[in-house]
Image 1 (tube, each protein chain N blue to C red):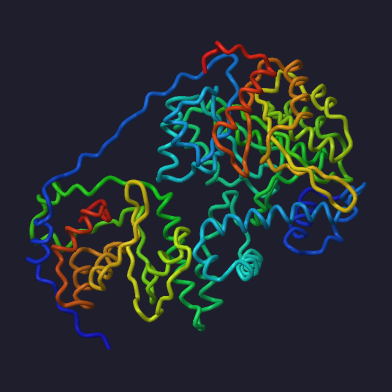
Image 2 (image 1 turned 120 degrees about the vertical axis):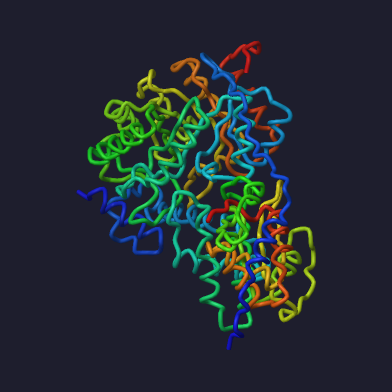
Length: 256
Length: 316
């Protein structure tokens, strides 16, 4: 008699490419071979995974082509199997996987593109949060302002890249039949991903602005965030940046 | 080498803060009125798909209710959940989970259960359901509905897990039979005997998927009506109808539960028998892949009404 835990371990091992032998005597193979029956489940599992990943990373699929994409997905699934009953989560380690594969090659840009695509997915489902109460800020004493700590809106993401990733993304959207050829050295986008009313937006930030927002997002007090921005751009205008980020809804909360 | 940072001037910081616009946008909060839950027989419902949300809200099709896949609405923000609120304001809602992996010997995913509880609390569904299956082990998920061996051990385990979920949610859940492509040699009873025993052990109800009964009956060579006759009638609180595909493995046919086709004639006939046995049980048209136009789903729902002889005058 095979225990339930043992049966389940052997079953999933067989689905993930392990040997069928330890399972063979426990599966009724009347009419259709037991291994073929397991094959149906294996096929279902692979198709569901591949379909979900393609929905989450359509630009990567388009960039690498469908043949190589199939191979990539197989390798990714073997190394990073689904760890949740919610298939949506399978994309979380994909950018890091691509970086390990391609980091030292001319295809390193794929990892950055995947970072942007995953940030898009996260922004779609992230919690909402109330707008920053700017009225309350007026009562903060001037000498206290440097200590203010803000939070990045939960549906915002900051994605630093080394390539013109926004243009690569746009050029590979479904409504663009033939993507333009881009010079990979023509940009290094520092991207704010935000959820607007009906869609996700990508905003390319200047280095000072990005450093500022990144510091704020890491709970650095306002004074330190300003220092971080000035280190990158000594003409950084804090007032303009704050106004812009508040208007974009990128900041929530403010405490000392 | 990093250049030395220029220390900010406190005035620059305080000016930046005071420079912000004084208009504070008031936080909007609105509560939609909840549609009254229907009592008694409702018209046939349809599975809620993302691509139909806007159309359902705008056109208010003549269906009795909608069923959403719970996991699709776990997101804490974004348009899906907001859209579900609008739909819930117009129709009764059922929540159908596919990812809890109840039959797995892995511990229940507490976070998943919390999310489900949050969803149930917010949307006040008429029914909450999951599957007679498992889909994970050792933390690796298959994201499919794998069949259980029908053993005493599996029964006790499944009953204990169903009990846990019912305790957390504070309500009865429905367990749905799945289509299967294999049977285990160690099974000690039939699937319908297992399901019947599960009802007795855990106090759960049954979501009877008539298409899945047909698919499994054809795949394993049992008589589909036997299943209908065997399960306790009082426990059947929802019926699913769906389509399937016929594939071949070598010379043999096998039916695959795609839920991506119209309901076939044999399943309509089996449904008619189910209505005769179980009476006016809420029925749902399930279509999960190759989603057609909303009209097609509504058409299938009206066909189910006709088979069940639901009077047209019954309000949705």
